[in-house]
Length: 379
Ligand SMILES: C[S@@+](CC[C@H](N)C(=O)[O-])C[C@H]1O[C@@H](n2cnc3c(N)ncnc32)[C@H](O)[C@@H]1O
Image 1 (tube, rainbow, N blue to C red):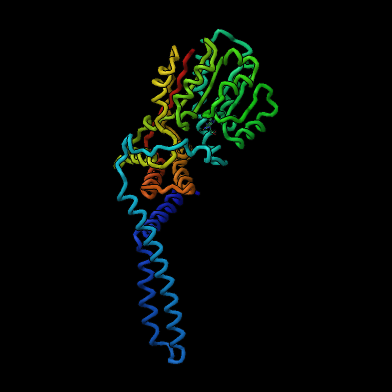
Image 2: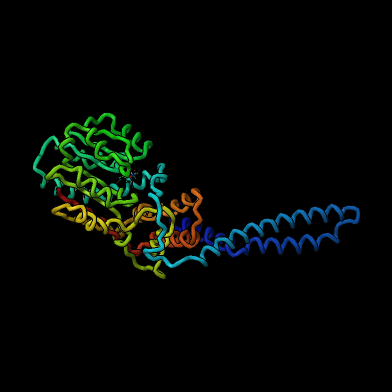
């Protein structure tokens, strides 16, 4: 589909969405039908008038039922929006874990793949720096915590010959099975299921590999901490699992590193702010907390690396991919939260803001920039 057709489709979707929201569509149908039906009854021959009247009543009842349904739906979402509290650090709902575990399937895998490619050079810089620090330069045994389907694990660790064994750990059985299947011919990789928030992480690690009795050489962990109830606890745990001289690499995510222009009515901030209100959404500002968390866990020699991506010189398809990676999944967070029975404020507002932002990404002169950063630290 060409860009013009896509944009005209979008315009229609918007028009219909607005008609529906404002009840104009049903109101208009009801009005025309009522006038038509009642105006037409006198024209029906006397002996059939009773049938015409019954059909008219049934038809009008259907239309009123439709109006009642839309009105009810509309009223409840308006009520949610009216009672919407202003977001502050304090009133962001406290949740147990995040929705991430439920966000699976080919679209999420695709999104993580795009994200993985985008952060490849950043991760490799961190790996290079980490390896340089370490006293051993061969037969290294390492762990990737929160490895997902193993795509990032494989793409980073297989860049180096120095790793003898790499364990990927994730709490999601299906995801781990995918990782096992995808890497079944690669001897150095071993994927296991474990919830790192459970007690017994240290013992689980020790039993993974005989060399881990003295501690682990290198731990890699990307995009996991934002999903945990107590990220500091895991950072502390990682410190205790590493051997002296061992190194950790943590990469998080941060909505605060995103800017754009034009940004009508603070659209970008609106999307970010509204995302925070979805119950069980992961901590979208977790990366900035890493420095404090690492210091608190008494890690030494903390170092950061940065990678900036923007829309300059990107094709329409690349810009669309960019939007997909950084924003599209937020609307699925809404669907999931609704499926899980959460009553979500500002659903329509967020959906509209996301759709407007997607439109902006399709404009050639739209500037969007985001930065990823990664930390390494030693024991
Ligand atoms: C956003 S994905 C990141 C996957 C991969 N590290 C990457 O960078 O693409 C987060 C992963 O952490 C896993 N996870 C979340 N909470 C976990 C926990 N408590 N223990 C182990 N894994 C967990 C999820 O199942 C998911 O596969």
